[in-house]
Length: 305
Image (tube, rainbow, N blue to C red; front, top):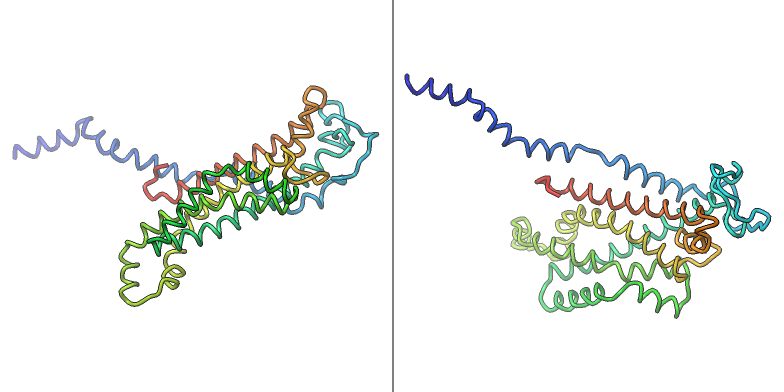
């Protein structure tokens, strides 16, 4: 009889009542962290994809038409006209139309680079991680060499040999980007092949190709998607940097990096030439990184980032 009042006092005490709340609070934070939706990054990426798909079709003017009589007209909020809401460049071309055209180039380059480098990196990771041995050693040393080689130097060399073009930009960035996929996915394969379901499949006589196709690839797809989302922003930024240096998409094709390069000579007199493509490039890369970070947090069952 003396024990029950003591238990009642213990459970009714403020300290005891605070213990369960303190224990469950981290779980509540994790659930809140998982329940948020990437409205900002998703909206920016949706606008970017929409502009890339239909932007040139709805552009008010041609992206390459030159009219010197429209030389450096300011945006509408700086004294310009609604006919050219974001102003014109040094050749009289509409900045808004060129931004929409540049979105298509950036979307095409980014998605192509992600697909090619992701597919090649996945194949290398599967062969290296599952087979192992000397093949793993050779492939990983080749991967390390690729990661150590500066992509911009490779771009300069290949552009000097083959010339600057949209196709060459895709090839250069894919050659420099597959190694990160191979390195990360290989670690996943090394972890997965020790799992019981893989061991049982080997015991039952399943071949390597069947195991890779039915077990390994489906289990690394979440990691591949996260990497692809993060690399999309990096590919778009790299294309912009190459176009800025003159070794990317050649003019008169509208490229955000090329627009930045052209506007750098008019920062004090025509600031809008560099401002608007810079904002478009920054927001797209930021949204891609935020979306990749959100997908990574969703794929973590513990809720830790």
